[in-house]
Image 1 (cartoon, one colour):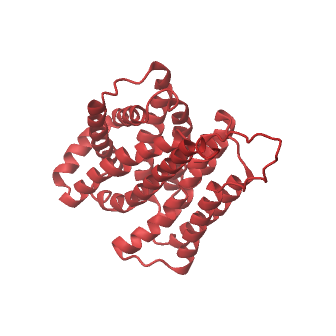
Image 2: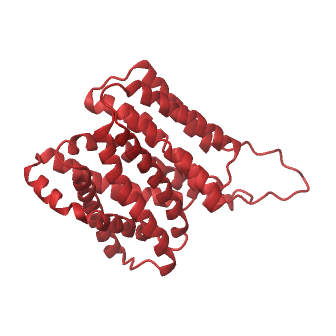
Image 3: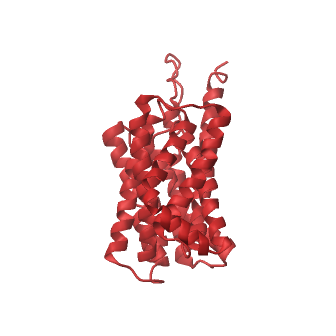
Length: 316
């Protein structure tokens, strides 16, 4: 009799975990596509093309599902996340990765989940249990290890480091702004209109996109379209679905799985065999995510005390 009320909550937990998994896998795959598309497209043009492709797909789904416009109360969060995360973040990251080597970029950008945890605790009242803090510490150590092992393959500049740091700050601010909007509008509405806001912000790069698309190889353009359809339209939707069912801090910690997956995908898709230090860093990233998402064992039941209800926000 006690199992049945927990069944819907457990199903929600599993769906949220699955959505988060889809997100990190697709975001990891984006690094491989950006490497190809970025050789033919400038940072702003690549961001605009990606956002336009994503907005087209998301808009079609909104029309099919007759989602309509988000309520006015959700627009503040949608607009802030659209400007910071969909717009500024993508341009700054694309630009920053052209100025520094991949290891330095990965190391600096992975400050983002820590900033999400701090902002979430300050602005959203997110709790920061010891397991979450410990898991983030382990994952960040792994991200640093991966970054250091990959560094030295290219040059680094102060501008590039600053751009990657600004991208991390924009990412954190966008996530924290998006969380309240998900309580007032649907996942598809928040993602679609956030993507549209980001695309509008990138419209000054329209002429660059047109001229570069005319000369870019087909593979680079297809990679740009892939970035818009999968790591943007699909992955940002599954991210929003999971974020609506957990805290911003836990979702931020989950993205520490991305560096490990990037190492694996580069190995399989590009033939880039990782060194032992890179593999060790990847294992640390995954171990930290596992710790941050784990839950303490339930205490032994007390005969005279009713079980405490479980909130979905602490489990996904």
